[in-house]
Length: 251
Image 1 (cartoon, rainbow, N blue to C red):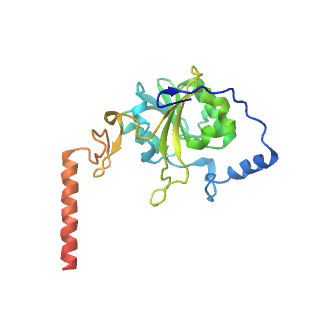
Image 2: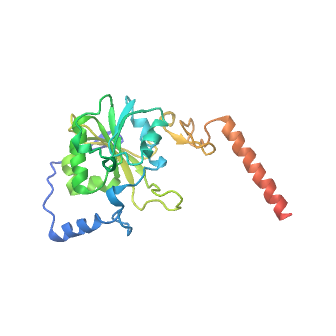
C-alpha cells in the first residue's frame, strides 16, 4: 500500500480460519445494514448511491469515458456518472434478470463502476470476476481493507479513494455511521493500493455540486459553492427575499 505517493510494501497476508464465535458474529452482522447499524438489511443490499459519494471519484477516472454498471438497481449511480459526461454502455441488475457473474464482457466499457452488494461471499466473487473483465471501481466500507478476508484481493487493488460518511436515505438528516471509499481493482496489478485522502485531488480536478441549481461542476476554489455567476446571483436574491419576508412577519 502507498499513502500520499509513499510506497509501503504489503506483507504476504494469509487469512487464518475464523473461530466459531467470529463466524457467528459475521453471519449475524450480514443480517444488518452495517456493523454499527441496528437496521435490518434491505434485500439484495438495494441502497441507491447518493450523489455525495460520486464527486470524490471523478478526478481519478482519467481515461475513462465509457463505463458499465452491472449492479445498477434503480440506476441512480448511472445518472450521477452521466451528469459528469461519462457514457454508460451497460446497466443491469439481478433484480431484472441480469446476473453480473454470468457476463464476461462489457463491450466498449473502459471501466466497471458500481456499488455492489456487501454480502461477503458474493462480494468476493464479484471482485474476482470484475477485475478480469476491466479495471473496476467498487464503493465499499472503508474498513473493508482491514478485514482479513480482504487480504487476497488487496494486491490487485490499485487505488483507494476516501469518501467519508454518506447519507443513504433521502429525506433523513443522519449520515451513515461508517466511512466509505472507492476501491479500484485491476487483474494486471499486483503491487497493492495507493490511498487517496479526502480532498487530496488538485482543486482544478475536484467535482462539486452547485448549491443553487444542484448540477455538478468543477470548483476553481476550495470555498466555491456555485457553478456560475448566474447561480450566485440567484442565491443572493433568494436570501434577500427571505430576509425581507421575515422582516415583514416580525414587524
